[in-house]
Length: 118
Image (cartoon, rainbow, N blue to C red; front, side, top):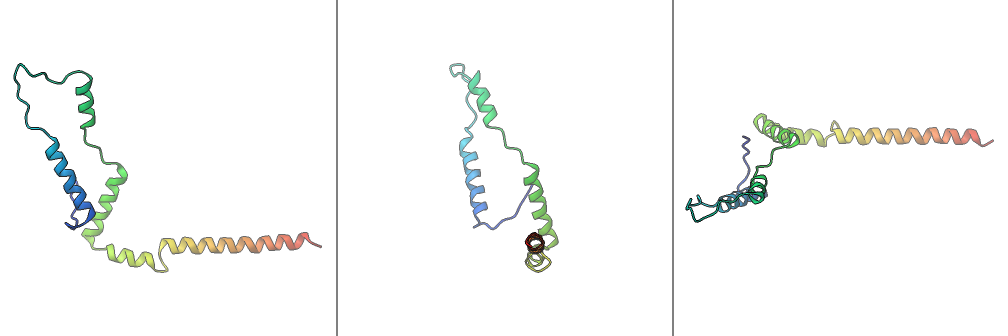
């Protein structure tokens, strides 16, 4: 079981509360077992059981929740945001390497073209 604390006014909290209301109102009270009533059987009961299963959490979702909880426990969320924005950030380094690679390609292309023309 995974617990996550969110602001009560956040979009995620509101959707969670709506989901809880649906599950509480969607579950009927215990059905009476009077001999005159039929119990659902056959294909419809099978489909009802299949569709009422809880969805399993994927590995990606679990990893995301674990990472978020770790950042919250360690208090490093703000530090990571600052680090990723600076010159040492991953995105900045990738962009720099792409610019260098493109520049090197243009230099090599110009050298090849200059050799071809007499």
